Image (cartoon, rainbow, N blue to C red; front, side, top):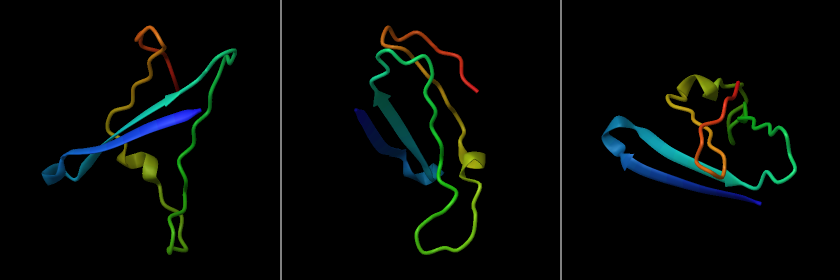
Length: 67
């Protein structure tokens, strides 16, 4: 199951906050991928370049390593 929350706390900065929660029971690794396409456009886009802050935590709220 995946739950996500999107908020727009600082619209003047044109930034959104995106929080994703998922069940990782019995899984050693998870892989997430951003789409390279957007609807209505026939070109590839590098959306990852716009990520400013990325953090991962376990169920005990301990910071996880990622790449």
